Length: 220
Length: 240
View 1 (tube, rainbow over the protein chains, first blue to last red):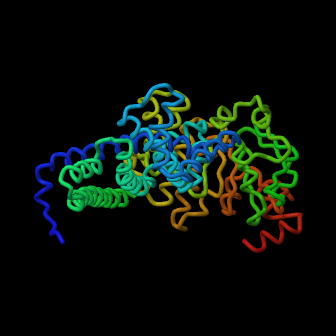
View 2 (view 1 turned 180 degrees about the vertical axis):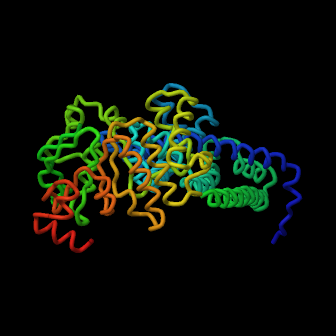
């Protein structure tokens, strides 16, 4: 039996740092896309128009009812077949994760909006605001505050899920570990190292969020 | 000013309003009283279409609210509403609560809107609270801000939906005083309330509602001193 020897990772440590940064970038962009898509989908699910409600619900169900890995493979390997061109790895990963995230954020948005007292909408409408104005100036700003904790969780989930981008050959954190494992013929240390990187990132992010949440709670 | 004809409202199988006919003249203060569940609030909420009538007709200044060609947002600018639970916007300061709609809906400039808002805050005695957030105000102060917010749109009618029911007793007077002041200024008002003294002192006309109908109406003297309908008598004997 061999002993663990983390010194073999050291010559490659820059790969891990770069991978971690890339994972962070993918996640951040994907969450932003997810928030935009999710906001519309979440509101769409509450629409009075049946077709809109149906389409948005369908989106959320399909996204949440299929594995992210399969979505990613469809996006990167499947789509070029009908598009006629390949989407480069980075945008493909960001888009696939973002579209996926949109499905989950939609539920967060819906929950956030429903959590705003319905008197707020009535007060806004009674002043002559249109539905869209009331949403924009009154409901969404308040809903957003309620959405921050679950959005933080979504960010953490997505950060971990970004490791799936490895399957389309994108050089993020998990991919870095794979490369090192291949070069050194020692898989345990590099994968443990990658896990440690993810862990430090998610834990520090959760810690940051808990501070933000406390601040928000204080301003209520 | 307001004309209501054969107004019905059902929530599912529950008939909340069962044929209301009413007329409210310009400058009149109409107080709606009645037991809880009698449909008073629903009636009021039909007047600015927060509730959609099941059938019947509501006209404000001759315009039918239910006519599809009527721009309800336009009508609502003329119909201010004050709610039981204030419904101030908690993420906006007092002055922003008041200026938001005039700026966004009426297109007033920031300065015009602020100037008008300060006048109104002075009128309700809260000029020093302009930059506060609603959370830091007492219930009575919140409701006075809510009144100022509604007035900022220069409405022709004000609807009050149990404006003092959520207040601690010692704060009721400050809100009623503001309402009295408004009434003496000639504002047309429809007030749903349990404050019988206010109804007596300020009301031009009192409507007694029960089970979705107006059972009796008249001047405060007629209703309070000499009620005709047995239900009115019973209700007043319980609360006076």
